[in-house]
Image (cartoon, rainbow, N blue to C red; front, side, top):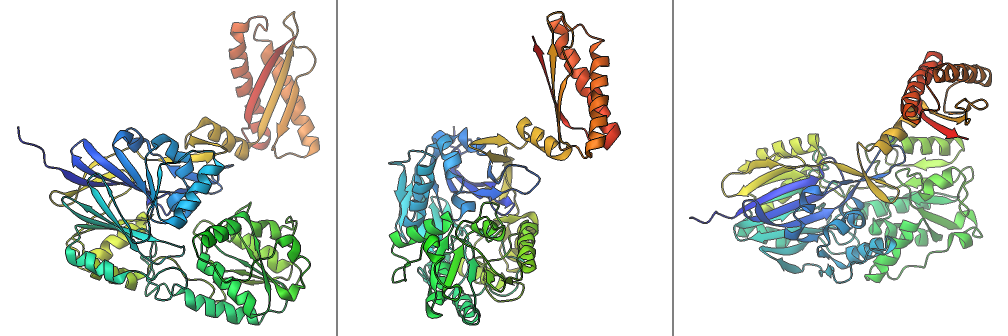
Length: 556
């Protein structure tokens, strides 16, 4: 019998159909017996439609079932949408993890907080380093982005090379860390690249993303003209922006105080890796209260309106150490991530109402994106010259536009995929050969739940319709003992109408109970089901709500 030809395949489980939750698989070997590597393992952020849940992760079931063939997880950089799921999902996989020093320290911290032992499994790769994992020979390529140590991965296999870009931009003045290794990228392209799997986030943005140096110059000018207290909020992970605020504060004669756990984590991690040196040490927020308002700058978490972020607590006057007065200034040095507009505009409006000045991307140049505009994308394609283009890291609209963009640049074989598609990139032309299970798992408290979990459905029902909790006391003779105990929550009725509803509910309980023998325990479930149906009708007739209903029978 002839040996089957080894094939090279790619399969995104997350991040191809949404922005965030990145999880990508590369497989090499004979059909149905691939050796796999995973690139990134990130979280996504939920919205108000999922009450009580802030984070979600890609469902890893496909690779969990094949974990004996999973050779390792390689992380391109330390943003949450690329590493945030590690502590939630790694215990299902238990494979080696590869990361550069800055990312590795943050991974250790995440696992330590969750009491997950990864000793011996975390492999630190130096910048521009190389690692061979089974049939994959992987070279790290330094890029620029809005976080320290971003990398593309040049993945060499026996049948061809793939460049996985991760997140990137072209910044000639990144201020922190190395410049993009354009020479290495061009050399990779010259050697020949079978496929490029590339970031699609800013494909609709014309021109270039801009430089961090330009933001620093602009923030300096802005802060020089502010007289009272200054609060700056930005992504904690952007260490270059953090350094900018430190340097601007020092130049205008102000002390700086970091507010929020993530700010302190990134500051300490960056310093441990040799960054953020020669800066004036930040003040503890408790000490900063003693500093005159024209001599202090606070750098805070919560730039996206996160409920537990420092900025939200400050705006709601709940923070123990940071207070704002009229004519203070808050600078939102970040872009609004789609979906967060409502939360952020609510914060902006609260500040303006209190006569606090708000500076954002709407009225000043205070942020540049970490993702490439179309001119930068064009540069990358000209350097790499891939035979195949596979857009990832975007919603469907981003990836379709990226597909058309690659086609317009003359890429011979652009391909369009989504989460769960297994695309064969060798041998032959790129072709989707299978579709595997994908989906989202929600991080609910300290556990993962399915999107269709009954717990979540119950919570949505309570949020939308309210709660009706009823306790019935049954005597030894099988009679209702005393009046039922009825607890209503979230029902839109004033006190007088609520009393009337309670009387109606009591009458309905007594009338329904007459149809059943309360001495017969086998009849108990039928009674409860009938009560739930009949009592919901009472509420619906009154207020057009069908509350989540819980009925308990207690036998005395």
